[in-house]
Image (cartoon, rainbow, N blue to C red; front, side, top):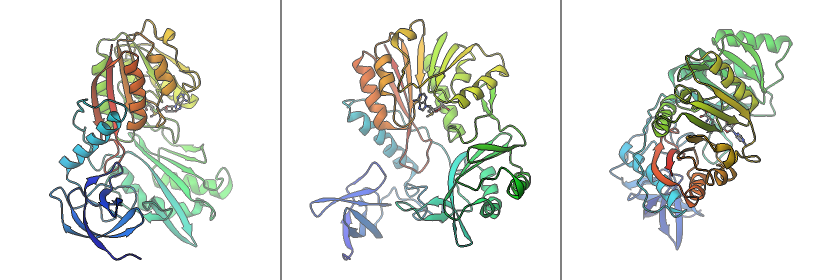
Length: 412
Ligand SMILES: C[S@@+](CC[C@H](N)C(=O)[O-])C[C@H]1O[C@@H](n2cnc3c(N)ncnc32)[C@H](O)[C@@H]1O
Protein backbone atom coordinates (compact mmCIF):
# COMPACT_ATOMS: atom_id res chain seq x y z
CA UNK A 1 0.00 0.00 0.00
CA UNK A 2 1.18 3.54 -0.85
CA UNK A 3 2.17 5.95 1.93
CA UNK A 4 -0.10 8.95 2.54
CA UNK A 5 0.74 12.12 0.63
CA UNK A 6 -0.19 15.74 1.20
CA UNK A 7 -2.02 17.37 -1.70
CA UNK A 8 -4.30 20.29 -2.52
CA UNK A 9 -7.80 19.68 -3.90
CA UNK A 10 -8.16 21.51 -7.19
CA UNK A 11 -11.90 21.19 -7.80
CA UNK A 12 -15.10 19.42 -6.82
CA UNK A 13 -16.38 16.70 -9.14
CA UNK A 14 -19.94 15.97 -10.25
CA UNK A 15 -20.34 13.22 -7.63
CA UNK A 16 -19.06 15.50 -4.86
CA UNK A 17 -15.54 14.04 -4.65
CA UNK A 18 -12.61 16.45 -4.33
CA UNK A 19 -10.36 16.15 -7.39
CA UNK A 20 -6.59 16.72 -7.18
CA UNK A 21 -4.31 16.74 -10.20
CA UNK A 22 -1.70 14.33 -8.97
CA UNK A 23 0.92 12.08 -10.51
CA UNK A 24 -0.03 13.07 -14.04
CA UNK A 25 -3.72 12.21 -13.54
CA UNK A 26 -6.77 12.98 -11.42
CA UNK A 27 -7.12 11.66 -7.88
CA UNK A 28 -10.72 11.51 -6.58
CA UNK A 29 -10.93 12.15 -2.84
CA UNK A 30 -14.37 11.69 -1.27
CA UNK A 31 -15.31 14.17 1.48
CA UNK A 32 -12.58 16.68 0.54
CA UNK A 33 -13.47 20.21 -0.59
CA UNK A 34 -11.98 22.49 -3.23
CA UNK A 35 -8.88 24.39 -2.01
CA UNK A 36 -8.31 22.11 0.98
CA UNK A 37 -4.86 20.80 1.84
CA UNK A 38 -5.39 17.13 2.75
CA UNK A 39 -3.48 13.97 3.59
CA UNK A 40 -4.61 11.05 1.43
CA UNK A 41 -3.56 7.52 0.63
CA UNK A 42 -3.65 7.10 -3.16
CA UNK A 43 -5.35 3.86 -4.24
CA UNK A 44 -5.46 3.95 -8.03
CA UNK A 45 -7.73 6.80 -9.10
CA UNK A 46 -9.14 7.14 -5.59
CA UNK A 47 -7.57 8.79 -2.58
CA UNK A 48 -8.57 7.73 0.93
CA UNK A 49 -8.90 10.86 3.07
CA UNK A 50 -6.59 10.44 6.10
CA UNK A 51 -6.76 13.97 7.48
CA UNK A 52 -7.39 17.61 6.69
CA UNK A 53 -4.34 19.84 6.98
CA UNK A 54 -5.96 23.15 5.99
CA UNK A 55 -9.76 23.08 5.93
CA UNK A 56 -11.80 25.03 3.40
CA UNK A 57 -13.75 28.01 4.82
CA UNK A 58 -16.79 26.16 3.43
CA UNK A 59 -16.25 23.10 5.66
CA UNK A 60 -18.98 22.53 8.30
CA UNK A 61 -19.77 19.81 10.83
CA UNK A 62 -21.95 17.08 9.30
CA UNK A 63 -25.39 16.75 10.89
CA UNK A 64 -25.34 12.94 11.12
CA UNK A 65 -22.95 10.73 13.12
CA UNK A 66 -23.11 8.13 10.33
CA UNK A 67 -21.83 10.56 7.70
CA UNK A 68 -18.93 9.03 5.70
CA UNK A 69 -20.05 5.53 6.71
CA UNK A 70 -23.60 5.54 5.37
CA UNK A 71 -23.77 5.89 1.59
CA UNK A 72 -27.04 7.86 1.71
CA UNK A 73 -25.35 11.30 1.91
CA UNK A 74 -22.12 12.56 0.36
CA UNK A 75 -22.18 16.32 0.99
CA UNK A 76 -23.03 17.10 4.62
CA UNK A 77 -19.57 18.64 5.14
CA UNK A 78 -20.22 21.66 2.90
CA UNK A 79 -21.69 25.03 3.99
CA UNK A 80 -25.10 25.82 2.44
CA UNK A 81 -23.88 28.67 0.22
CA UNK A 82 -21.04 26.69 -1.36
CA UNK A 83 -23.28 23.62 -1.60
CA UNK A 84 -25.96 25.62 -3.44
CA UNK A 85 -23.36 27.01 -5.87
CA UNK A 86 -22.00 23.49 -6.51
CA UNK A 87 -25.48 22.18 -7.36
CA UNK A 88 -26.06 25.15 -9.66
CA UNK A 89 -22.73 24.28 -11.33
CA UNK A 90 -23.82 20.66 -11.86
CA UNK A 91 -26.70 21.95 -13.97
CA UNK A 92 -24.57 24.67 -15.60
CA UNK A 93 -21.88 22.15 -16.64
CA UNK A 94 -24.39 19.61 -17.99
CA UNK A 95 -26.08 22.28 -20.10
CA UNK A 96 -22.73 23.71 -21.27
CA UNK A 97 -21.75 20.25 -22.53
CA UNK A 98 -24.63 20.55 -25.06
CA UNK A 99 -23.62 24.03 -26.16
CA UNK A 100 -25.63 26.15 -23.69
CA UNK A 101 -22.62 28.02 -22.36
CA UNK A 102 -23.97 31.35 -21.20
CA UNK A 103 -27.29 30.40 -19.67
CA UNK A 104 -28.28 32.05 -16.40
CA UNK A 105 -29.04 29.36 -13.82
CA UNK A 106 -31.37 30.47 -11.01
CA UNK A 107 -30.26 29.89 -7.40
CA UNK A 108 -30.91 26.41 -5.98
CA UNK A 109 -34.33 26.03 -4.37
CA UNK A 110 -33.22 24.70 -0.98
CA UNK A 111 -34.83 21.98 1.13
CA UNK A 112 -34.19 21.14 4.77
CA UNK A 113 -33.30 18.02 6.75
CA UNK A 114 -36.38 16.32 8.19
CA UNK A 115 -38.44 16.76 5.00
CA UNK A 116 -37.85 13.50 3.07
CA UNK A 117 -41.17 11.68 3.01
CA UNK A 118 -40.19 8.79 0.74
CA UNK A 119 -37.19 6.55 1.35
CA UNK A 120 -35.99 3.17 0.15
CA UNK A 121 -33.96 1.22 2.72
CA UNK A 122 -32.35 -2.19 2.68
CA UNK A 123 -32.50 -5.01 5.23
CA UNK A 124 -30.22 -8.02 5.43
CA UNK A 125 -29.99 -10.94 7.86
CA UNK A 126 -26.50 -12.02 8.88
CA UNK A 127 -27.15 -15.14 10.94
CA UNK A 128 -29.80 -13.85 13.33
CA UNK A 129 -28.57 -10.27 13.25
CA UNK A 130 -30.54 -7.77 11.22
CA UNK A 131 -28.86 -4.95 9.38
CA UNK A 132 -31.42 -2.33 8.38
CA UNK A 133 -30.51 0.97 6.75
CA UNK A 134 -28.67 2.20 3.67
CA UNK A 135 -25.80 0.70 1.72
CA UNK A 136 -22.32 1.95 2.47
CA UNK A 137 -20.86 4.13 -0.25
CA UNK A 138 -19.44 2.02 -3.13
CA UNK A 139 -20.26 -1.19 -1.23
CA UNK A 140 -22.99 -3.79 -0.83
CA UNK A 141 -22.59 -3.70 2.96
CA UNK A 142 -25.62 -2.38 4.85
CA UNK A 143 -25.19 0.30 7.52
CA UNK A 144 -27.64 0.09 10.43
CA UNK A 145 -29.65 3.31 10.59
CA UNK A 146 -32.12 3.78 13.43
CA UNK A 147 -32.45 7.52 12.81
CA UNK A 148 -31.88 9.47 9.62
CA UNK A 149 -31.89 13.28 9.99
CA UNK A 150 -33.19 13.67 6.44
CA UNK A 151 -36.44 11.79 7.06
CA UNK A 152 -39.71 13.28 8.27
CA UNK A 153 -40.37 12.56 11.98
CA UNK A 154 -43.11 10.00 11.21
CA UNK A 155 -40.59 7.78 9.39
CA UNK A 156 -37.90 8.13 12.04
CA UNK A 157 -40.40 7.16 14.73
CA UNK A 158 -41.09 3.97 12.80
CA UNK A 159 -37.56 2.71 12.07
CA UNK A 160 -36.65 1.04 15.41
CA UNK A 161 -40.05 -0.70 15.75
CA UNK A 162 -39.96 -1.84 12.15
CA UNK A 163 -36.51 -3.34 12.73
CA UNK A 164 -38.04 -5.60 15.43
CA UNK A 165 -40.56 -7.05 12.97
CA UNK A 166 -38.51 -7.31 9.79
CA UNK A 167 -36.63 -10.56 10.57
CA UNK A 168 -40.00 -12.36 10.72
CA UNK A 169 -40.60 -11.65 7.06
CA UNK A 170 -37.17 -11.95 5.53
CA UNK A 171 -35.53 -14.77 3.69
CA UNK A 172 -31.91 -15.57 4.54
CA UNK A 173 -30.95 -15.55 0.88
CA UNK A 174 -32.02 -12.12 -0.24
CA UNK A 175 -31.72 -8.54 0.88
CA UNK A 176 -35.16 -7.02 1.39
CA UNK A 177 -36.08 -3.63 -0.04
CA UNK A 178 -38.16 -1.46 2.25
CA UNK A 179 -40.02 1.48 0.73
CA UNK A 180 -41.48 3.97 3.18
CA UNK A 181 -43.84 6.77 2.25
CA UNK A 182 -45.16 9.14 4.91
CA UNK A 183 -48.62 10.27 3.81
CA UNK A 184 -51.16 12.53 5.52
CA UNK A 185 -53.09 9.46 6.67
CA UNK A 186 -50.15 7.38 7.90
CA UNK A 187 -47.16 5.45 6.61
CA UNK A 188 -47.45 3.38 3.44
CA UNK A 189 -44.98 0.49 3.80
CA UNK A 190 -43.93 -1.72 0.89
CA UNK A 191 -41.64 -4.72 1.44
CA UNK A 192 -39.98 -6.34 -1.55
CA UNK A 193 -37.93 -9.55 -1.81
CA UNK A 194 -39.50 -10.86 1.40
CA UNK A 195 -41.32 -14.14 2.19
CA UNK A 196 -44.68 -14.82 0.62
CA UNK A 197 -46.89 -13.45 3.40
CA UNK A 198 -50.29 -14.08 1.83
CA UNK A 199 -51.52 -16.66 4.27
CA UNK A 200 -51.16 -18.44 7.61
CA UNK A 201 -49.01 -17.25 10.48
CA UNK A 202 -46.93 -14.88 8.35
CA UNK A 203 -50.04 -12.97 7.27
CA UNK A 204 -51.29 -12.77 10.86
CA UNK A 205 -47.90 -11.42 11.96
CA UNK A 206 -48.01 -8.88 9.12
CA UNK A 207 -51.45 -7.71 10.26
CA UNK A 208 -50.16 -7.47 13.85
CA UNK A 209 -47.25 -5.33 12.66
CA UNK A 210 -49.52 -3.06 10.59
CA UNK A 211 -51.72 -2.48 13.64
CA UNK A 212 -48.85 -2.03 16.07
CA UNK A 213 -47.10 0.48 13.78
CA UNK A 214 -50.43 2.07 12.83
CA UNK A 215 -49.59 1.75 9.14
CA UNK A 216 -51.99 3.12 6.57
CA UNK A 217 -51.15 0.32 4.13
CA UNK A 218 -48.86 -2.69 4.00
CA UNK A 219 -47.74 -4.34 0.76
CA UNK A 220 -45.36 -7.20 0.14
CA UNK A 221 -43.73 -8.30 -3.12
CA UNK A 222 -45.96 -5.94 -5.11
CA UNK A 223 -49.30 -6.98 -3.56
CA UNK A 224 -51.30 -5.05 -0.98
CA UNK A 225 -51.75 -7.22 2.13
CA UNK A 226 -53.74 -4.76 4.17
CA UNK A 227 -55.14 -1.27 3.72
CA UNK A 228 -56.22 0.10 7.10
CA UNK A 229 -56.72 3.59 5.65
CA UNK A 230 -56.03 4.81 2.11
CA UNK A 231 -52.62 6.51 2.16
CA UNK A 232 -53.37 10.07 1.03
CA UNK A 233 -51.21 12.81 -0.43
CA UNK A 234 -52.68 16.23 -1.06
CA UNK A 235 -51.99 17.45 -4.59
CA UNK A 236 -53.60 20.82 -5.18
CA UNK A 237 -57.34 20.46 -4.65
CA UNK A 238 -57.26 16.66 -4.70
CA UNK A 239 -56.23 13.78 -2.45
CA UNK A 240 -54.20 11.10 -4.20
CA UNK A 241 -53.77 7.56 -2.97
CA UNK A 242 -50.73 6.46 -5.04
CA UNK A 243 -50.15 2.81 -5.95
CA UNK A 244 -47.96 0.96 -3.43
CA UNK A 245 -44.26 1.59 -4.10
CA UNK A 246 -45.04 3.89 -7.06
CA UNK A 247 -43.21 7.05 -7.98
CA UNK A 248 -43.90 9.97 -5.67
CA UNK A 249 -41.77 13.13 -5.43
CA UNK A 250 -39.47 12.45 -2.46
CA UNK A 251 -39.93 15.81 -0.73
CA UNK A 252 -43.21 17.64 -0.35
CA UNK A 253 -41.58 21.09 -0.25
CA UNK A 254 -39.63 20.35 -3.46
CA UNK A 255 -42.84 19.13 -5.10
CA UNK A 256 -44.68 22.30 -4.10
CA UNK A 257 -41.84 24.50 -5.40
CA UNK A 258 -41.82 22.66 -8.75
CA UNK A 259 -45.61 22.81 -9.06
CA UNK A 260 -45.57 26.56 -8.35
CA UNK A 261 -43.01 27.15 -11.12
CA UNK A 262 -45.02 25.05 -13.57
CA UNK A 263 -48.26 26.91 -12.79
CA UNK A 264 -46.53 30.26 -13.20
CA UNK A 265 -44.97 29.19 -16.51
CA UNK A 266 -48.21 27.94 -18.06
CA UNK A 267 -49.98 31.09 -16.82
CA UNK A 268 -53.50 31.40 -18.25
CA UNK A 269 -53.14 28.43 -20.61
CA UNK A 270 -56.58 26.90 -21.14
CA UNK A 271 -55.41 23.52 -22.46
CA UNK A 272 -52.32 21.85 -21.10
CA UNK A 273 -50.61 18.50 -21.83
CA UNK A 274 -48.89 16.67 -18.93
CA UNK A 275 -46.55 13.91 -20.13
CA UNK A 276 -45.20 11.23 -17.75
CA UNK A 277 -47.90 12.45 -15.36
CA UNK A 278 -47.62 9.66 -12.74
CA UNK A 279 -50.50 9.84 -10.26
CA UNK A 280 -51.21 13.45 -11.17
CA UNK A 281 -48.77 15.51 -9.11
CA UNK A 282 -48.88 18.32 -11.67
CA UNK A 283 -52.02 17.42 -13.68
CA UNK A 284 -54.28 17.76 -10.64
CA UNK A 285 -52.87 21.20 -9.88
CA UNK A 286 -53.06 22.30 -13.51
CA UNK A 287 -56.70 21.18 -13.63
CA UNK A 288 -57.66 23.96 -11.23
CA UNK A 289 -57.56 26.37 -14.19
CA UNK A 290 -57.01 24.35 -17.38
CA UNK A 291 -58.29 21.34 -19.29
CA UNK A 292 -55.52 18.74 -19.05
CA UNK A 293 -54.49 15.77 -21.21
CA UNK A 294 -52.43 13.55 -18.91
CA UNK A 295 -50.36 10.68 -20.35
CA UNK A 296 -48.43 8.02 -18.47
CA UNK A 297 -47.13 4.47 -18.97
CA UNK A 298 -48.35 2.92 -15.70
CA UNK A 299 -51.98 1.91 -15.52
CA UNK A 300 -52.04 1.89 -11.70
CA UNK A 301 -50.79 5.49 -11.54
CA UNK A 302 -53.54 6.61 -13.92
CA UNK A 303 -56.17 4.82 -11.82
CA UNK A 304 -54.99 6.77 -8.76
CA UNK A 305 -55.13 9.97 -10.75
CA UNK A 306 -58.62 9.20 -12.04
CA UNK A 307 -59.96 8.57 -8.55
CA UNK A 308 -58.30 11.67 -7.09
CA UNK A 309 -59.72 13.80 -9.92
CA UNK A 310 -63.29 12.45 -9.47
CA UNK A 311 -63.27 13.44 -5.80
CA UNK A 312 -61.26 16.66 -6.34
CA UNK A 313 -62.63 20.09 -5.56
CA UNK A 314 -63.92 21.99 -8.63
CA UNK A 315 -61.38 20.60 -11.08
CA UNK A 316 -61.64 21.03 -14.82
CA UNK A 317 -61.53 18.03 -17.12
CA UNK A 318 -58.54 15.69 -17.23
CA UNK A 319 -58.34 13.31 -20.19
CA UNK A 320 -56.15 10.36 -19.19
CA UNK A 321 -54.29 8.09 -21.54
CA UNK A 322 -52.01 5.16 -20.94
CA UNK A 323 -49.19 5.32 -23.44
CA UNK A 324 -45.57 4.27 -23.70
CA UNK A 325 -44.11 7.64 -24.55
CA UNK A 326 -40.71 6.17 -25.43
CA UNK A 327 -42.14 3.92 -28.13
CA UNK A 328 -45.14 5.99 -29.08
CA UNK A 329 -44.46 9.62 -28.24
CA UNK A 330 -47.28 12.13 -28.48
CA UNK A 331 -47.07 13.50 -32.02
CA UNK A 332 -46.69 17.18 -32.88
CA UNK A 333 -49.99 16.96 -34.77
CA UNK A 334 -51.72 15.81 -31.55
CA UNK A 335 -50.42 18.87 -29.72
CA UNK A 336 -52.35 21.31 -31.95
CA UNK A 337 -54.98 23.32 -30.04
CA UNK A 338 -52.96 23.09 -26.80
CA UNK A 339 -51.39 26.14 -25.15
CA UNK A 340 -48.71 24.52 -22.99
CA UNK A 341 -47.01 21.20 -22.27
CA UNK A 342 -45.25 19.84 -19.17
CA UNK A 343 -43.03 16.75 -19.24
CA UNK A 344 -41.36 14.98 -16.31
CA UNK A 345 -39.71 11.79 -17.60
CA UNK A 346 -37.66 9.17 -15.72
CA UNK A 347 -33.83 9.53 -15.57
CA UNK A 348 -33.48 8.33 -19.17
CA UNK A 349 -35.14 11.56 -20.32
CA UNK A 350 -37.53 11.96 -23.24
CA UNK A 351 -35.52 12.01 -26.48
CA UNK A 352 -38.16 10.63 -28.86
CA UNK A 353 -40.83 12.76 -27.21
CA UNK A 354 -38.76 15.94 -27.49
CA UNK A 355 -38.25 15.33 -31.21
CA UNK A 356 -42.04 15.63 -31.54
CA UNK A 357 -42.39 18.63 -29.21
CA UNK A 358 -39.66 20.37 -31.24
CA UNK A 359 -41.90 20.11 -34.32
CA UNK A 360 -44.93 21.54 -32.50
CA UNK A 361 -46.15 25.13 -32.24
CA UNK A 362 -46.81 24.99 -28.49
CA UNK A 363 -46.01 28.44 -27.08
CA UNK A 364 -44.85 27.14 -23.65
CA UNK A 365 -43.04 23.93 -22.68
CA UNK A 366 -41.91 23.10 -19.14
CA UNK A 367 -39.33 20.37 -18.60
CA UNK A 368 -38.92 18.75 -15.18
CA UNK A 369 -35.95 16.44 -14.80
CA UNK A 370 -33.92 14.59 -12.17
CA UNK A 371 -31.00 14.05 -14.56
CA UNK A 372 -29.15 17.13 -15.87
CA UNK A 373 -27.35 14.99 -18.50
CA UNK A 374 -30.45 13.74 -20.30
CA UNK A 375 -32.17 17.09 -19.67
CA UNK A 376 -29.36 18.88 -21.55
CA UNK A 377 -29.71 16.43 -24.47
CA UNK A 378 -33.48 16.97 -24.61
CA UNK A 379 -33.19 20.77 -24.36
CA UNK A 380 -30.75 20.73 -27.29
CA UNK A 381 -33.45 19.03 -29.39
CA UNK A 382 -36.07 21.61 -28.36
CA UNK A 383 -33.81 24.61 -28.92
CA UNK A 384 -32.68 23.28 -32.32
CA UNK A 385 -36.39 23.04 -33.12
CA UNK A 386 -36.86 26.76 -32.42
CA UNK A 387 -37.54 27.00 -28.68
CA UNK A 388 -35.82 29.52 -26.40
CA UNK A 389 -34.88 28.68 -22.82
CA UNK A 390 -36.59 31.26 -20.59
CA UNK A 391 -35.51 29.97 -17.15
CA UNK A 392 -33.57 27.16 -15.50
CA UNK A 393 -34.13 26.45 -11.80
CA UNK A 394 -32.38 23.69 -9.86
CA UNK A 395 -34.34 22.20 -6.94
CA UNK A 396 -32.68 20.35 -4.06
CA UNK A 397 -35.04 17.40 -3.95
CA UNK A 398 -32.17 15.08 -2.92
CA UNK A 399 -30.46 16.94 -0.10
CA UNK A 400 -26.75 16.19 0.50
CA UNK A 401 -26.56 13.92 -2.54
CA UNK A 402 -25.06 14.65 -5.97
CA UNK A 403 -28.53 14.43 -7.51
CA UNK A 404 -30.38 17.55 -8.54
CA UNK A 405 -33.85 18.15 -9.88
CA UNK A 406 -34.44 20.91 -12.42
CA UNK A 407 -37.35 22.89 -13.85
CA UNK A 408 -36.81 24.55 -17.23
CA UNK A 409 -39.29 26.78 -19.03
CA UNK A 410 -39.07 27.19 -22.81
CA UNK A 411 -41.06 29.43 -25.11
CA UNK A 412 -41.53 30.03 -28.82
C1 LIG B 1 -40.20 11.21 -12.71
S1 LIG B 1 -41.73 10.37 -12.71
C2 LIG B 1 -42.81 11.73 -12.76
C3 LIG B 1 -44.23 11.46 -12.39
C4 LIG B 1 -45.11 12.68 -12.12
N1 LIG B 1 -44.89 13.73 -13.07
C5 LIG B 1 -44.93 13.17 -10.71
O1 LIG B 1 -44.42 14.27 -10.52
O2 LIG B 1 -45.32 12.46 -9.77
C6 LIG B 1 -41.74 9.67 -14.29
C7 LIG B 1 -43.00 8.97 -14.68
O3 LIG B 1 -42.82 8.47 -16.01
C8 LIG B 1 -43.48 7.23 -16.11
N2 LIG B 1 -42.85 6.52 -17.24
C9 LIG B 1 -41.67 5.86 -17.26
N3 LIG B 1 -41.42 5.37 -18.48
C10 LIG B 1 -42.48 5.72 -19.26
C11 LIG B 1 -42.80 5.53 -20.62
N4 LIG B 1 -41.98 4.85 -21.43
N5 LIG B 1 -43.96 6.03 -21.09
C12 LIG B 1 -44.79 6.72 -20.29
N6 LIG B 1 -44.53 6.95 -18.98
C13 LIG B 1 -43.39 6.45 -18.47
C14 LIG B 1 -43.28 6.59 -14.76
O4 LIG B 1 -44.28 5.59 -14.53
C15 LIG B 1 -43.41 7.80 -13.84
O5 LIG B 1 -44.74 7.97 -13.42
